[in-house]
Length: 541
Image 1: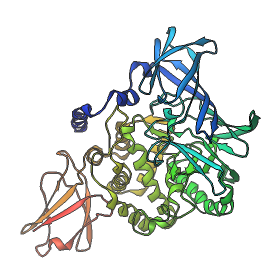
Image 2: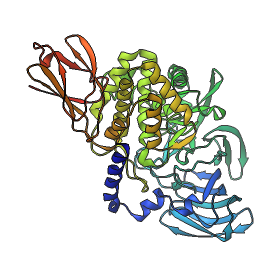
Image 3: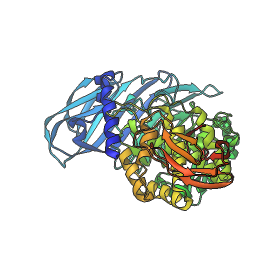
Protein backbone atom coordinates (compact mmCIF):
# COMPACT_ATOMS: atom_id res chain seq x y z
CA UNK A 1 0.00 0.00 0.00
CA UNK A 2 2.72 2.44 1.00
CA UNK A 3 4.92 1.78 -2.01
CA UNK A 4 1.92 1.90 -4.34
CA UNK A 5 1.07 5.42 -3.18
CA UNK A 6 4.66 6.60 -3.37
CA UNK A 7 4.99 5.20 -6.88
CA UNK A 8 1.86 6.97 -8.09
CA UNK A 9 3.08 10.22 -6.59
CA UNK A 10 6.50 10.07 -8.21
CA UNK A 11 4.95 9.20 -11.58
CA UNK A 12 2.99 12.42 -11.24
CA UNK A 13 6.23 14.30 -10.56
CA UNK A 14 7.79 12.96 -13.74
CA UNK A 15 4.91 14.31 -15.81
CA UNK A 16 5.73 17.82 -14.56
CA UNK A 17 9.48 17.59 -15.21
CA UNK A 18 9.31 19.54 -18.49
CA UNK A 19 8.12 22.67 -16.66
CA UNK A 20 11.48 23.09 -14.91
CA UNK A 21 14.74 24.44 -16.32
CA UNK A 22 18.42 23.57 -16.14
CA UNK A 23 18.82 26.46 -13.72
CA UNK A 24 16.25 24.85 -11.39
CA UNK A 25 17.97 21.48 -11.45
CA UNK A 26 21.39 23.05 -10.87
CA UNK A 27 20.06 24.66 -7.70
CA UNK A 28 17.79 21.86 -6.50
CA UNK A 29 19.48 18.73 -7.76
CA UNK A 30 22.14 16.42 -6.39
CA UNK A 31 24.86 15.52 -8.86
CA UNK A 32 28.31 14.09 -8.26
CA UNK A 33 29.90 17.53 -8.05
CA UNK A 34 27.72 18.21 -5.01
CA UNK A 35 27.61 14.80 -3.33
CA UNK A 36 31.39 14.22 -3.51
CA UNK A 37 32.11 16.57 -0.60
CA UNK A 38 30.75 17.47 2.83
CA UNK A 39 30.79 21.05 4.12
CA UNK A 40 32.32 21.27 7.59
CA UNK A 41 32.20 25.01 8.24
CA UNK A 42 31.48 28.44 6.77
CA UNK A 43 33.48 31.52 7.78
CA UNK A 44 32.07 34.79 6.46
CA UNK A 45 34.13 38.00 6.68
CA UNK A 46 32.23 40.80 4.98
CA UNK A 47 31.82 44.56 4.75
CA UNK A 48 28.40 46.06 4.03
CA UNK A 49 28.14 49.60 2.69
CA UNK A 50 24.51 50.62 3.33
CA UNK A 51 24.64 53.73 1.17
CA UNK A 52 25.91 51.88 -1.89
CA UNK A 53 24.06 48.68 -0.98
CA UNK A 54 27.36 46.98 -1.66
CA UNK A 55 28.66 43.79 -0.08
CA UNK A 56 32.30 42.72 -0.27
CA UNK A 57 34.66 40.35 1.47
CA UNK A 58 35.23 36.63 1.62
CA UNK A 59 33.70 33.32 2.58
CA UNK A 60 35.97 30.44 3.54
CA UNK A 61 34.44 27.00 3.13
CA UNK A 62 36.00 24.08 5.00
CA UNK A 63 35.11 20.72 3.47
CA UNK A 64 35.92 17.02 3.39
CA UNK A 65 35.95 14.83 0.30
CA UNK A 66 33.51 11.92 0.44
CA UNK A 67 34.77 10.68 -2.93
CA UNK A 68 37.77 11.37 -5.12
CA UNK A 69 37.00 14.40 -7.26
CA UNK A 70 38.65 17.11 -9.31
CA UNK A 71 35.49 19.23 -9.67
CA UNK A 72 32.97 20.44 -7.09
CA UNK A 73 29.88 22.63 -7.38
CA UNK A 74 29.22 25.63 -5.17
CA UNK A 75 26.62 28.34 -5.69
CA UNK A 76 26.67 32.14 -5.86
CA UNK A 77 24.20 34.33 -7.72
CA UNK A 78 25.68 35.51 -10.99
CA UNK A 79 25.26 39.21 -10.14
CA UNK A 80 27.94 38.75 -7.44
CA UNK A 81 31.46 38.95 -8.88
CA UNK A 82 34.08 36.44 -7.79
CA UNK A 83 37.34 38.31 -7.39
CA UNK A 84 39.63 35.48 -6.30
CA UNK A 85 39.52 31.85 -5.22
CA UNK A 86 42.29 30.07 -3.31
CA UNK A 87 42.56 26.46 -2.09
CA UNK A 88 44.28 25.76 1.23
CA UNK A 89 45.68 29.32 1.44
CA UNK A 90 48.16 28.76 -1.38
CA UNK A 91 46.74 27.53 -4.68
CA UNK A 92 44.63 29.71 -6.93
CA UNK A 93 41.90 27.70 -8.59
CA UNK A 94 39.86 28.15 -11.75
CA UNK A 95 36.11 27.96 -12.11
CA UNK A 96 33.29 28.24 -14.59
CA UNK A 97 29.76 29.51 -14.06
CA UNK A 98 26.46 28.13 -15.24
CA UNK A 99 23.60 30.35 -14.07
CA UNK A 100 24.18 30.59 -10.30
CA UNK A 101 26.24 27.41 -10.09
CA UNK A 102 30.03 27.60 -9.80
CA UNK A 103 32.02 24.59 -11.01
CA UNK A 104 35.46 24.65 -9.44
CA UNK A 105 38.22 22.62 -11.08
CA UNK A 106 41.31 21.82 -9.06
CA UNK A 107 44.77 21.30 -10.53
CA UNK A 108 44.64 17.66 -9.49
CA UNK A 109 42.06 15.26 -8.11
CA UNK A 110 41.34 15.70 -4.40
CA UNK A 111 41.42 12.43 -2.51
CA UNK A 112 38.56 10.89 -0.55
CA UNK A 113 38.87 11.74 3.15
CA UNK A 114 41.09 14.76 2.59
CA UNK A 115 40.30 18.08 4.31
CA UNK A 116 40.50 21.43 2.55
CA UNK A 117 39.63 25.10 2.78
CA UNK A 118 38.46 27.21 -0.12
CA UNK A 119 38.54 30.99 0.32
CA UNK A 120 36.36 32.94 -2.10
CA UNK A 121 36.73 36.70 -2.37
CA UNK A 122 33.66 38.30 -3.92
CA UNK A 123 31.67 41.52 -4.14
CA UNK A 124 28.56 43.08 -5.59
CA UNK A 125 25.14 44.54 -4.98
CA UNK A 126 23.13 41.64 -3.58
CA UNK A 127 19.62 40.98 -4.83
CA UNK A 128 17.01 43.18 -3.11
CA UNK A 129 13.76 41.53 -2.03
CA UNK A 130 10.54 42.97 -3.39
CA UNK A 131 8.42 41.61 -0.54
CA UNK A 132 10.52 39.81 2.09
CA UNK A 133 10.22 37.25 3.53
CA UNK A 134 7.96 35.88 0.76
CA UNK A 135 10.67 36.48 -1.79
CA UNK A 136 14.36 36.29 -1.02
CA UNK A 137 16.83 39.13 -0.80
CA UNK A 138 18.15 42.07 1.18
CA UNK A 139 15.87 44.64 2.75
CA UNK A 140 17.38 48.14 2.90
CA UNK A 141 15.27 50.33 5.17
CA UNK A 142 15.75 52.99 7.82
CA UNK A 143 14.50 53.63 11.34
CA UNK A 144 12.53 56.72 12.39
CA UNK A 145 15.81 58.58 12.95
CA UNK A 146 16.86 57.92 9.39
CA UNK A 147 19.60 55.45 10.30
CA UNK A 148 20.06 52.38 8.07
CA UNK A 149 18.11 49.29 9.10
CA UNK A 150 18.97 46.24 7.01
CA UNK A 151 18.06 42.57 6.98
CA UNK A 152 18.16 39.58 4.69
CA UNK A 153 15.80 36.64 4.21
CA UNK A 154 16.53 34.00 1.58
CA UNK A 155 14.44 30.88 2.25
CA UNK A 156 13.50 29.23 -1.04
CA UNK A 157 15.37 31.75 -3.18
CA UNK A 158 18.73 30.59 -1.86
CA UNK A 159 21.44 31.70 0.54
CA UNK A 160 23.79 31.91 -2.43
CA UNK A 161 22.24 35.26 -3.31
CA UNK A 162 24.64 36.80 -0.77
CA UNK A 163 27.40 34.32 0.08
CA UNK A 164 28.96 31.35 -1.75
CA UNK A 165 27.84 28.02 -0.35
CA UNK A 166 26.66 24.56 -1.19
CA UNK A 167 23.11 25.82 -1.54
CA UNK A 168 21.12 22.73 -0.65
CA UNK A 169 19.43 21.61 2.55
CA UNK A 170 21.13 18.22 2.30
CA UNK A 171 24.38 19.54 3.76
CA UNK A 172 24.78 21.66 6.88
CA UNK A 173 28.22 22.69 8.19
CA UNK A 174 29.02 20.13 10.87
CA UNK A 175 31.26 22.53 12.79
CA UNK A 176 29.03 25.58 12.60
CA UNK A 177 29.97 28.96 11.19
CA UNK A 178 31.39 32.38 11.95
CA UNK A 179 29.82 35.56 10.64
CA UNK A 180 31.92 38.73 10.75
CA UNK A 181 30.31 41.82 9.26
CA UNK A 182 31.78 45.34 9.23
CA UNK A 183 29.28 48.20 9.11
CA UNK A 184 29.55 51.99 9.55
CA UNK A 185 30.33 53.20 13.06
CA UNK A 186 27.16 53.80 15.07
CA UNK A 187 25.48 50.72 13.64
CA UNK A 188 25.56 47.15 14.91
CA UNK A 189 25.39 43.84 13.08
CA UNK A 190 23.60 40.94 14.77
CA UNK A 191 24.05 37.43 13.37
CA UNK A 192 23.55 33.87 14.54
CA UNK A 193 25.13 32.33 17.63
CA UNK A 194 27.20 34.02 20.29
CA UNK A 195 28.65 37.53 20.12
CA UNK A 196 32.47 37.38 20.26
CA UNK A 197 33.19 41.10 20.20
CA UNK A 198 33.54 44.11 17.94
CA UNK A 199 36.63 45.66 16.37
CA UNK A 200 37.20 49.13 14.92
CA UNK A 201 38.47 48.77 11.37
CA UNK A 202 39.47 51.32 8.75
CA UNK A 203 37.40 54.06 7.11
CA UNK A 204 34.89 54.52 9.90
CA UNK A 205 33.65 50.94 10.10
CA UNK A 206 33.26 48.50 13.01
CA UNK A 207 33.29 44.74 12.56
CA UNK A 208 30.89 42.60 14.62
CA UNK A 209 31.91 38.97 15.16
CA UNK A 210 29.52 36.06 15.79
CA UNK A 211 30.12 32.33 16.22
CA UNK A 212 27.72 29.42 15.68
CA UNK A 213 28.57 26.14 17.39
CA UNK A 214 25.80 24.02 15.88
CA UNK A 215 25.08 22.80 12.36
CA UNK A 216 22.95 25.41 10.61
CA UNK A 217 20.79 25.61 7.47
CA UNK A 218 22.23 27.79 4.72
CA UNK A 219 19.14 29.97 4.67
CA UNK A 220 19.31 30.47 8.44
CA UNK A 221 22.67 32.26 8.33
CA UNK A 222 21.86 35.94 8.53
CA UNK A 223 22.89 39.51 9.19
CA UNK A 224 20.86 42.31 10.77
CA UNK A 225 22.18 45.86 10.72
CA UNK A 226 20.73 48.78 12.66
CA UNK A 227 20.97 51.10 15.64
CA UNK A 228 20.21 48.23 18.00
CA UNK A 229 20.09 48.11 21.78
CA UNK A 230 20.64 44.83 23.57
CA UNK A 231 18.28 43.45 26.22
CA UNK A 232 19.53 40.39 28.09
CA UNK A 233 17.55 37.91 30.20
CA UNK A 234 17.89 34.31 31.31
CA UNK A 235 15.27 31.67 31.84
CA UNK A 236 16.14 28.42 33.59
CA UNK A 237 19.69 28.54 32.31
CA UNK A 238 18.86 29.55 28.73
CA UNK A 239 20.19 32.94 27.61
CA UNK A 240 17.49 35.14 26.11
CA UNK A 241 18.78 38.11 24.12
CA UNK A 242 16.73 40.71 22.32
CA UNK A 243 18.19 43.18 19.82
CA UNK A 244 15.69 45.92 19.08
CA UNK A 245 15.72 49.40 17.57
CA UNK A 246 16.69 51.98 20.12
CA UNK A 247 13.29 53.65 19.81
CA UNK A 248 11.51 50.41 20.81
CA UNK A 249 13.54 49.39 23.87
CA UNK A 250 10.88 50.05 26.51
CA UNK A 251 7.99 48.30 24.72
CA UNK A 252 10.20 45.38 23.70
CA UNK A 253 11.14 44.50 27.29
CA UNK A 254 7.54 44.12 28.35
CA UNK A 255 6.27 42.55 25.14
CA UNK A 256 8.83 39.77 24.84
CA UNK A 257 8.66 38.89 28.52
CA UNK A 258 4.94 38.13 28.19
CA UNK A 259 5.39 35.44 25.52
CA UNK A 260 8.94 34.12 25.46
CA UNK A 261 9.25 32.48 28.87
CA UNK A 262 5.83 30.73 28.77
CA UNK A 263 6.62 29.69 25.20
CA UNK A 264 9.96 28.17 26.16
CA UNK A 265 8.35 26.31 29.07
CA UNK A 266 5.67 24.96 26.75
CA UNK A 267 7.90 24.01 23.83
CA UNK A 268 10.59 22.42 25.97
CA UNK A 269 7.99 20.34 27.80
CA UNK A 270 6.42 19.16 24.53
CA UNK A 271 9.38 18.96 22.11
CA UNK A 272 12.47 18.65 24.32
CA UNK A 273 15.20 21.03 25.42
CA UNK A 274 15.85 24.02 23.19
CA UNK A 275 18.10 22.46 20.53
CA UNK A 276 20.65 25.28 20.24
CA UNK A 277 21.41 25.91 23.90
CA UNK A 278 25.12 26.47 23.16
CA UNK A 279 24.26 29.34 20.79
CA UNK A 280 21.59 30.93 22.98
CA UNK A 281 18.23 32.30 21.84
CA UNK A 282 17.76 35.71 20.26
CA UNK A 283 14.94 37.76 18.82
CA UNK A 284 16.21 40.44 16.44
CA UNK A 285 13.94 43.24 15.23
CA UNK A 286 13.84 43.32 11.43
CA UNK A 287 12.35 45.55 8.71
CA UNK A 288 10.39 42.54 7.39
CA UNK A 289 7.82 40.36 9.14
CA UNK A 290 9.91 37.44 10.33
CA UNK A 291 12.04 34.38 9.60
CA UNK A 292 13.31 31.41 11.59
CA UNK A 293 17.01 32.34 11.48
CA UNK A 294 18.55 29.84 13.87
CA UNK A 295 19.39 31.36 17.29
CA UNK A 296 18.69 34.82 15.80
CA UNK A 297 14.97 34.73 15.04
CA UNK A 298 13.88 37.64 12.85
CA UNK A 299 11.05 39.61 14.47
CA UNK A 300 8.98 42.22 12.64
CA UNK A 301 5.47 41.94 14.10
CA UNK A 302 5.61 45.48 15.53
CA UNK A 303 4.96 44.31 19.10
CA UNK A 304 1.39 43.30 18.39
CA UNK A 305 -0.63 40.26 19.35
CA UNK A 306 -1.79 37.98 16.59
CA UNK A 307 -0.42 38.40 13.09
CA UNK A 308 0.19 42.13 12.73
CA UNK A 309 -2.79 42.68 15.01
CA UNK A 310 -5.09 40.17 13.29
CA UNK A 311 -6.16 36.64 14.16
CA UNK A 312 -5.39 34.39 11.21
CA UNK A 313 -7.73 31.72 12.59
CA UNK A 314 -10.67 34.11 12.74
CA UNK A 315 -11.71 32.60 16.07
CA UNK A 316 -10.26 35.04 18.61
CA UNK A 317 -7.93 32.34 19.94
CA UNK A 318 -5.08 33.73 17.85
CA UNK A 319 -5.02 36.99 19.77
CA UNK A 320 -3.54 35.43 22.93
CA UNK A 321 0.01 35.58 21.59
CA UNK A 322 2.43 37.25 19.19
CA UNK A 323 2.26 35.05 16.10
CA UNK A 324 5.78 35.78 14.85
CA UNK A 325 7.45 35.07 18.19
CA UNK A 326 5.65 31.74 18.59
CA UNK A 327 5.71 30.52 14.99
CA UNK A 328 9.28 31.45 14.12
CA UNK A 329 10.58 30.08 17.42
CA UNK A 330 8.69 26.84 16.80
CA UNK A 331 10.96 26.46 13.79
CA UNK A 332 13.94 26.10 16.10
CA UNK A 333 12.68 22.56 16.68
CA UNK A 334 10.98 21.96 13.32
CA UNK A 335 13.00 23.29 10.41
CA UNK A 336 16.22 24.38 12.08
CA UNK A 337 16.83 21.29 14.21
CA UNK A 338 14.85 18.82 12.07
CA UNK A 339 15.46 19.81 8.46
CA UNK A 340 14.04 18.45 5.21
CA UNK A 341 16.52 17.18 2.61
CA UNK A 342 14.67 18.90 -0.23
CA UNK A 343 12.44 21.95 -0.10
CA UNK A 344 9.78 19.81 -1.78
CA UNK A 345 9.36 18.38 1.73
CA UNK A 346 9.10 21.75 3.45
CA UNK A 347 5.89 20.62 5.11
CA UNK A 348 8.27 18.94 7.60
CA UNK A 349 9.17 22.51 8.62
CA UNK A 350 5.90 24.35 8.18
CA UNK A 351 3.24 21.79 9.08
CA UNK A 352 4.83 20.92 12.41
CA UNK A 353 5.68 24.55 13.18
CA UNK A 354 2.15 25.76 12.45
CA UNK A 355 0.97 23.06 14.83
CA UNK A 356 3.26 24.51 17.53
CA UNK A 357 0.94 27.53 17.60
CA UNK A 358 -1.92 25.23 18.59
CA UNK A 359 0.34 23.53 21.15
CA UNK A 360 1.19 26.89 22.73
CA UNK A 361 -2.49 27.78 23.04
CA UNK A 362 -3.20 24.43 24.66
CA UNK A 363 -0.35 25.00 27.13
CA UNK A 364 -1.64 28.43 28.11
CA UNK A 365 -5.40 28.42 27.43
CA UNK A 366 -6.44 24.78 27.33
CA UNK A 367 -7.57 22.13 24.87
CA UNK A 368 -10.86 23.74 23.82
CA UNK A 369 -9.21 27.00 22.77
CA UNK A 370 -6.50 25.06 20.95
CA UNK A 371 -9.09 23.01 19.08
CA UNK A 372 -10.94 26.18 18.15
CA UNK A 373 -7.74 27.75 16.83
CA UNK A 374 -6.56 24.85 14.66
CA UNK A 375 -9.99 24.39 13.12
CA UNK A 376 -10.24 28.10 12.41
CA UNK A 377 -7.24 27.67 10.13
CA UNK A 378 -9.25 25.39 7.82
CA UNK A 379 -10.82 28.39 6.10
CA UNK A 380 -7.40 29.29 4.70
CA UNK A 381 -6.73 25.89 3.10
CA UNK A 382 -6.86 26.27 -0.69
CA UNK A 383 -6.36 22.69 -1.89
CA UNK A 384 -4.75 24.14 -5.00
CA UNK A 385 -1.94 21.59 -5.38
CA UNK A 386 -0.23 18.91 -3.29
CA UNK A 387 1.66 19.89 -0.15
CA UNK A 388 4.74 18.00 -1.32
CA UNK A 389 6.49 19.75 -4.20
CA UNK A 390 8.70 18.50 -7.02
CA UNK A 391 12.03 17.04 -5.98
CA UNK A 392 15.42 18.04 -7.31
CA UNK A 393 14.39 21.38 -8.83
CA UNK A 394 14.19 23.71 -5.80
CA UNK A 395 10.39 23.61 -5.78
CA UNK A 396 8.12 23.87 -2.75
CA UNK A 397 4.64 22.44 -2.64
CA UNK A 398 1.43 24.29 -1.84
CA UNK A 399 1.26 26.87 0.92
CA UNK A 400 -1.30 24.48 2.40
CA UNK A 401 1.75 22.90 4.07
CA UNK A 402 1.05 25.38 6.91
CA UNK A 403 -2.62 25.06 7.83
CA UNK A 404 -3.47 21.76 6.20
CA UNK A 405 -0.27 20.34 7.65
CA UNK A 406 -1.33 21.41 11.15
CA UNK A 407 -4.85 20.05 10.63
CA UNK A 408 -3.36 16.73 9.51
CA UNK A 409 -1.33 16.52 12.72
CA UNK A 410 -4.41 17.37 14.78
CA UNK A 411 -6.20 14.55 12.93
CA UNK A 412 -3.39 12.09 13.66
CA UNK A 413 -3.50 13.04 17.33
CA UNK A 414 -7.14 12.05 17.48
CA UNK A 415 -6.61 8.88 15.46
CA UNK A 416 -4.26 7.82 18.27
CA UNK A 417 -7.00 8.70 20.75
CA UNK A 418 -4.46 8.71 23.58
CA UNK A 419 -2.94 12.05 24.57
CA UNK A 420 -0.20 10.51 26.70
CA UNK A 421 0.91 8.51 23.68
CA UNK A 422 0.56 11.53 21.36
CA UNK A 423 2.72 13.90 23.38
CA UNK A 424 5.33 11.19 23.87
CA UNK A 425 5.37 10.50 20.12
CA UNK A 426 5.79 14.19 19.29
CA UNK A 427 8.62 14.68 21.78
CA UNK A 428 10.33 11.44 20.75
CA UNK A 429 10.13 12.52 17.10
CA UNK A 430 11.71 15.89 17.93
CA UNK A 431 14.49 14.35 19.98
CA UNK A 432 15.16 11.34 17.74
CA UNK A 433 15.83 13.53 14.69
CA UNK A 434 17.36 16.48 16.54
CA UNK A 435 19.88 18.25 14.29
CA UNK A 436 19.25 15.78 11.49
CA UNK A 437 18.20 16.07 7.84
CA UNK A 438 15.27 13.83 6.90
CA UNK A 439 12.50 13.25 4.37
CA UNK A 440 8.79 12.43 4.36
CA UNK A 441 9.36 8.67 4.39
CA UNK A 442 11.40 9.03 7.58
CA UNK A 443 8.54 10.91 9.25
CA UNK A 444 5.92 8.37 8.19
CA UNK A 445 8.01 5.37 9.20
CA UNK A 446 8.66 6.88 12.63
CA UNK A 447 5.01 7.73 13.28
CA UNK A 448 3.92 4.26 12.14
CA UNK A 449 6.44 2.50 14.37
CA UNK A 450 5.87 4.61 17.48
CA UNK A 451 2.08 4.71 17.21
CA UNK A 452 1.72 1.03 16.34
CA UNK A 453 -0.68 2.11 13.57
CA UNK A 454 -0.48 2.24 9.79
CA UNK A 455 -0.77 5.97 9.26
CA UNK A 456 0.66 5.87 5.75
CA UNK A 457 -2.74 6.27 4.01
CA UNK A 458 -3.44 9.35 6.14
CA UNK A 459 -0.11 11.03 5.40
CA UNK A 460 -0.34 10.23 1.69
CA UNK A 461 -3.90 11.53 1.42
CA UNK A 462 -3.21 14.91 2.97
CA UNK A 463 0.31 15.43 1.60
CA UNK A 464 0.05 14.20 -2.00
CA UNK A 465 -3.53 15.02 -3.03
CA UNK A 466 -5.78 18.08 -2.97
CA UNK A 467 -8.76 16.02 -1.83
CA UNK A 468 -10.21 16.27 1.66
CA UNK A 469 -11.64 12.89 2.76
CA UNK A 470 -15.41 12.87 2.71
CA UNK A 471 -17.30 10.58 5.08
CA UNK A 472 -20.49 9.44 3.38
CA UNK A 473 -23.34 8.38 5.66
CA UNK A 474 -26.51 6.70 4.42
CA UNK A 475 -29.36 5.38 6.55
CA UNK A 476 -31.31 2.42 5.22
CA UNK A 477 -34.15 0.73 7.05
CA UNK A 478 -32.05 -0.88 9.79
CA UNK A 479 -28.43 0.10 9.31
CA UNK A 480 -26.12 3.03 8.94
CA UNK A 481 -23.96 2.70 5.84
CA UNK A 482 -20.64 4.53 5.84
CA UNK A 483 -17.56 4.85 3.63
CA UNK A 484 -14.84 7.25 2.50
CA UNK A 485 -15.08 9.12 -0.77
CA UNK A 486 -12.81 11.69 -2.45
CA UNK A 487 -9.72 9.76 -1.36
CA UNK A 488 -6.91 7.59 -2.64
CA UNK A 489 -8.15 4.03 -3.33
CA UNK A 490 -6.30 2.59 -0.34
CA UNK A 491 -7.35 5.28 2.15
CA UNK A 492 -8.65 4.25 5.54
CA UNK A 493 -8.96 6.16 8.79
CA UNK A 494 -11.01 5.72 11.97
CA UNK A 495 -13.48 8.41 12.93
CA UNK A 496 -15.56 9.18 16.02
CA UNK A 497 -19.31 9.65 15.72
CA UNK A 498 -21.99 10.32 18.29
CA UNK A 499 -25.47 8.80 17.94
CA UNK A 500 -28.08 10.12 20.34
CA UNK A 501 -25.48 11.02 22.94
CA UNK A 502 -23.40 7.85 22.65
CA UNK A 503 -19.91 8.27 21.15
CA UNK A 504 -18.28 5.41 19.28
CA UNK A 505 -15.42 4.86 16.87
CA UNK A 506 -16.01 3.47 13.39
CA UNK A 507 -13.42 2.33 10.85
CA UNK A 508 -14.51 3.39 7.36
CA UNK A 509 -12.67 2.44 4.17
CA UNK A 510 -13.54 3.18 0.57
CA UNK A 511 -15.80 0.13 0.65
CA UNK A 512 -19.26 0.55 2.17
CA UNK A 513 -19.65 -0.82 5.69
CA UNK A 514 -22.75 -1.08 7.85
CA UNK A 515 -23.56 -0.39 11.48
CA UNK A 516 -26.77 -1.59 13.10
CA UNK A 517 -28.73 1.29 14.64
CA UNK A 518 -32.20 1.75 16.08
CA UNK A 519 -34.94 2.20 13.52
CA UNK A 520 -35.80 5.60 14.94
CA UNK A 521 -32.33 7.01 14.37
CA UNK A 522 -32.06 9.53 11.55
CA UNK A 523 -29.00 11.07 9.94
CA UNK A 524 -29.73 14.25 11.86
CA UNK A 525 -29.16 12.28 15.07
CA UNK A 526 -25.59 11.49 14.05
CA UNK A 527 -22.77 13.92 14.88
CA UNK A 528 -19.30 13.47 13.39
CA UNK A 529 -16.20 14.71 15.24
CA UNK A 530 -15.15 17.15 12.52
CA UNK A 531 -13.28 19.31 15.03
CA UNK A 532 -10.91 16.45 15.79
CA UNK A 533 -10.56 15.12 12.24
CA UNK A 534 -10.00 17.25 9.13
CA UNK A 535 -12.71 15.80 6.90
CA UNK A 536 -15.94 16.62 5.09
CA UNK A 537 -19.24 14.86 5.80
CA UNK A 538 -22.00 13.96 3.36
CA UNK A 539 -25.29 12.63 4.68
CA UNK A 540 -27.41 10.92 2.06
CA UNK A 541 -30.97 9.94 2.78
